[in-house]
Image 1 (cartoon, rainbow, N blue to C red):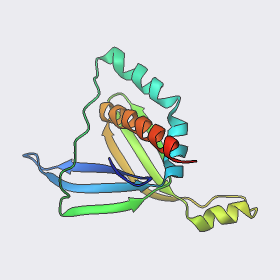
Image 2 (cartoon, rainbow, N blue to C red):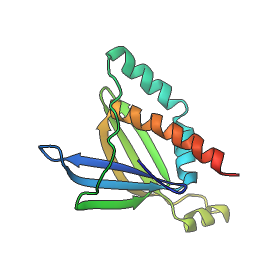
Image 3 (spheres, one colour):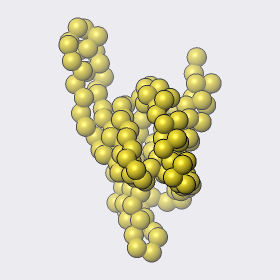
Length: 145
């Protein structure tokens, strides 16, 4: 995870056999998008912890990024959905444009939402990521009026 001002960039890498990163997906979230996502996680995080602890799963440490692999893509998302099943988890990222929000405010019945990317990961890694995002959310709230 990389903070650039109020924007939170979530980094998801895939490792080669041998350890170096093969590719990287950066998902950039504005502060409002992160807040919306984390608000939905207030009940989800305790549920995930209650699922993992009796099974003896321990959260995995997040990897510190030192360099970007050649195959890197950056995407923008302002919404996310999260789910887990046994040891697997999924993060689905979506984006609605400023124009879509404008139309919604003008009375359009539906919000146009575009899928961005699905990230499949280990549930223990998801727990570590969400715990870190709780900290980021708190720091962003203290910086904003």
